[in-house]
Length: 263
Ligand code: NAP
Image (cartoon, rainbow, N blue to C red; front, side, top):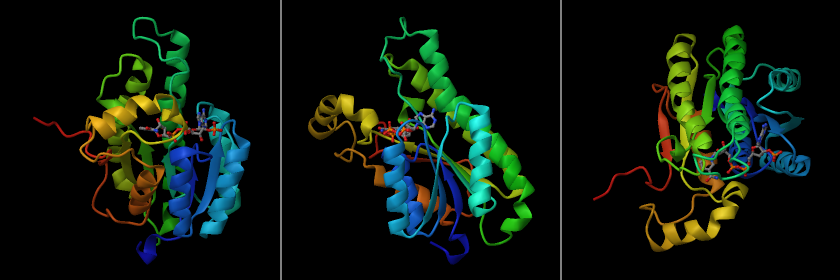
């Protein structure tokens, strides 16, 4: 990590568990001050905050639904009150559909719920935090390059017909990354998407056996192992640490090579 980009003030959504927790811990190792957001599992968020402090960071915990405007505003306000202007937003919170229904049977309610959490929330939060970063651009000076990192998915291009609403939301994250990158470059704000493959978390626990076979026996991914939350955490920390000063709008695949076409 470059000295210049250290001690970020970051909001990580959905940081109580899984990938979000690993992102928080990677940032904490570089001395970040973190707003740990969760939705319903307060105990897990508390554990993340404890681990963040042990790792060398600072933490405040905020319960908020990323799909709700007032909650997003409250997160930004509380981060500012605790640590000062926010220079990093990681849009990580996400949900799988509650029911994996075939495309022809999926309910409108599930579509709305998944889109609100996985696309509308991150989009509107990026807009809100962008305005905040532009307002505070002079405060950051040369110390840090403000950035937004979106956690997408291989589902942006791999069609799973039993969770179409999830795929559509993640495809939207791809364009959202391009849009904000193009718009914010003139303000010196970087925007990236990290595109995880199949990562071992609560989200994938229900399909563990299926993917054990596909990955370990059939070689679904050229690198024959499950992804770990830390794999994503390290990629976020690399961006946050200033490893890509002349890049924006990039999608970084952290997927064991899943995206490679093979013959
Ligand atoms: P996870 O273990 O299910 O954790 C989801 C996190 O998001 C939890 O912290 C949860 O909070 C939070 N969350 C859910 N809905 C929320 C809402 N409305 N407002 C605020 N927070 C909310 O999932 P994960 O595997 O770590 O996934 C993290 C991100 O990576 C998601 O965007 C997911 O789509 C993406 N991803 C995951 C995989 C994978 O294989 N696991 C692959 C590609 C992409 P609570 O703890 O309070 O419930």
